[in-house]
Image 1 (cartoon, rainbow, N blue to C red):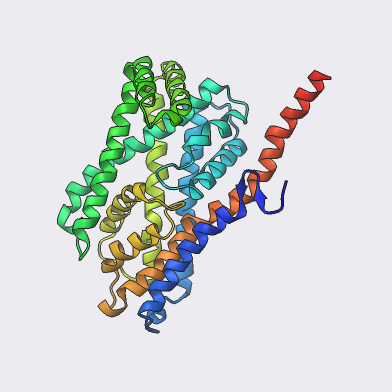
Image 2: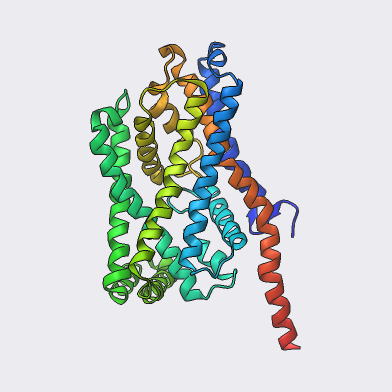
Length: 354
């Protein structure tokens, strides 16, 4: 294995999102530099306490995912295996555009932990289903409680609302399509997917479409065994995971300021994550910091002249807590996982040939 690669993921693919994110934050701060920004963002004992709380929220986020994937595997995955799968999954999401994410290779991660292909496909499909269900249910609730005018307030309110509406529409359409395939007509959905990707201009993706359709059929067969309690437990774990992720921003704001409306911050985090669906950069780097800075700066109780710069500093801390750790963990775990998952298999195959 070459020194400049992490298995199939090369080091420059890790460097790109870091450079994009850090570069954008540095540009924002330097553009209208004001030393008063760092009078507001000071690392006191209170600040360190709430930064620690932000990391604990991320632990809650990963714990919710681990509980859920163990539930989906019916206890076949150990806690250690669940942690490894989640870290690899998040690492893949961190180095690919948000619209692609890590789902495309997640079946491999799960399968290589000893789960049959059919059940691995079911686990990944169910993960996607519950993630989209969370957004489909929670976003309209927070939109109704907060109100569109407050949720999308500010000079870019209309543009951000358009982004969120497009993202929500895509998520809802995917949820409906996935629900139809998993619960009503998996074979029919597979046929439709394959037909669509048999059209001129789309044929290059037909093999992947066939595989996706097959995964849906396998998943539909698998999930018919699950009882009602399973669905309640799975949604509870999903709620813990995603809600913990959004509360990270609340904790970071509390580290330095007294925020009057924490539910608004939570609601904007939810809307922001939906907007990131259209981000073309790896892990939404640059785009995520931009949206965070412009969407949440007005909740910071400082003068208008330093609001954006202060928000940029908080955005950097937010990404340090929610994003960069997965790049590090993935880079550490992936090489060893590849050796254990593929080298042993190749050795076994060679022995059988001999």
